Image (tube, rainbow, N blue to C red; front, side, top):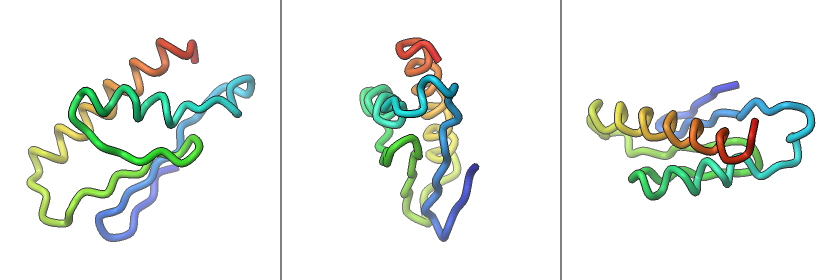
Length: 79
């Protein structure tokens, strides 16, 4: 479930039933920060808050970093 208002975007992580209470959002956050992206995890929902005037190439980099961070967190958590 991805939703947005203005420049704020939120997306829910889909987890297996056994991991519903895991801190997957925080795990993705921990993987994203060293890669150069700040995002906000609230439970298993990730929030991105880029300024409205962010260049497209920066948004593309944010999407790539987020994808890489999710992949790395999945490997660590086994989901």
